[in-house]
Amino acid sequence: MAIIDLQNVTVSFDNQHVLHSVNFAMKSGEFVYLVGQTGAGKSSLLRLIYVDLQPHEGRVSVAGFDAHRIKSREIPKLRRKLGVVFQDFKLLPDRDVYENVAFALYVTSTPRSEIKKKVLMALGDVGLSHKRNQMPHELSGGEQQRVVIARALVNSPSLLLADEPTGNLDPASSAEIIELLRTINVRGTAVLMATHNYELVRRYPARIVQLKDGKLLEVELRERK
Amino acid sequence: MALGYLLKEGISGFRRAKLSMFAAIFTISISLLLLSFFTILLINANSVIEGLRNRVELEVFLGDYLSKSDTDTLQTKIVGLIGVEDVRYVSKDEAARIFQEEFGEDINKVLDFNPLPASFKVRLKDGYRTTAGAESVYVATKEMKGVEEVAYRKSLLEMLDTRAQTFLWLALGIGSFVAISAIFLVANTIRLAIYAKRKIIQTMKLIGATRTFIRIPFLLEGLVQGFIGGAIAAGVIYLAFEYLEQFVSMQLSDLVAVDREAYGIIIGVGCLLGILGSILSIRRFIGEKVVEQ
Image (tube, rainbow over all chains, first blue to last red; front, top):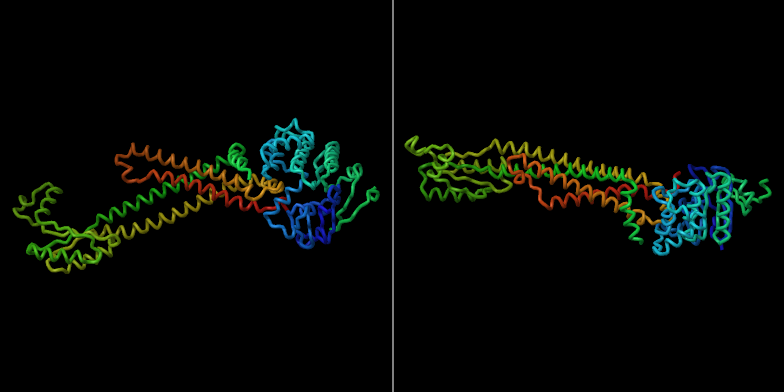
């Protein structure tokens, strides 16, 4: 079953098409790279999926929600089914690692007894249990990104969206993040990762779609060599 | 909904953003102090003006030749005039006694006779204690048979009519200005505090927090800020009056009425200002997109 289904989606800013009649479907449990140059519309496509942006034409359906018909009070429910990871982390700077991850559970009114268990498990998954009492600014970029991934995972989402998750990281940390995302994918979570780091894509092959001139194309890995 | 979390979150803002909390509380206190002092001043000025008006009465001097029954008839006629509240008869003897009280001399001994006429002291009804009200009674009584002279403090009433009215309008204008400024000042301070948390609000939305969930801690924060700001303002006003009373010979509390309820009202208005400021401020940020364009 498709977890993401975009049909003839058009998005324009200032009368310029960023996405033009885009069709894209992604199955549950799939791992997909979304590649394209800066400004190609990768972030806009992801924003369509977490309903921060509405298409000007076409249909977007995500995890059983139809973005066109969704009521504004249903958007939080959809977002809880997704995990979103950003290049600039978006951690809450005024609370420690544990609280940052636990925050996603407070939002969903998870019982207190379960919160601790789930947070420690998620931090264990990303290898940061020992840093749970540190503040975000005390961590390296790679570590911060792993906290964000832990926060995205703690609600057991069926889909993880990653917008240039390695954009601010050195090659070693980038590789760690990709490996982490692949592990998460192997456990059953679908991952859609926007990136322009072709080196990583080559090292960790998966389905690739490319945004170019507002169009979405399927790309074979061999063609990029 | 995770009530415990929301409560904790509302309070922990104080720990996380001390400076903006302090700024908001300080702003609320100052605004309330300004408003309170102004209101107290206005209420008291108004009661002083009303007090002066209440004291204005017309003196209707009677001819010595009037008999008892003529006097009674005249009194009935004056009581029946529009705007008259009551009429008190002051006999020649009583007038002499009042003279002695005021000047320390017995007029009968000074002049060998009592030249002071008997009179009616006419008090006006509320709403007629104006130049126009007094003047109509003045004209009506002056034409009555047996009335020699009618006197009242026309200049005082005229002064009250013109200047007091101007003063009240001016005070009301400045008061409204102060009140509106207070709301804007508080809303602006809170908006700056929330603006600093804009990214946090975006992250909350991204994780799937509902608008209510995001809003409640900010409202609680506003409420607590308002309460503390209000309590500080009430405390300052209380101390100010306690302190002033020691230096002003007149019993200040007689003139300046600050009831116990007034302190409650100040704190209540503080809470209201805090919540209102938060609602106005957060409304803008909560509707923003997660990703800025």
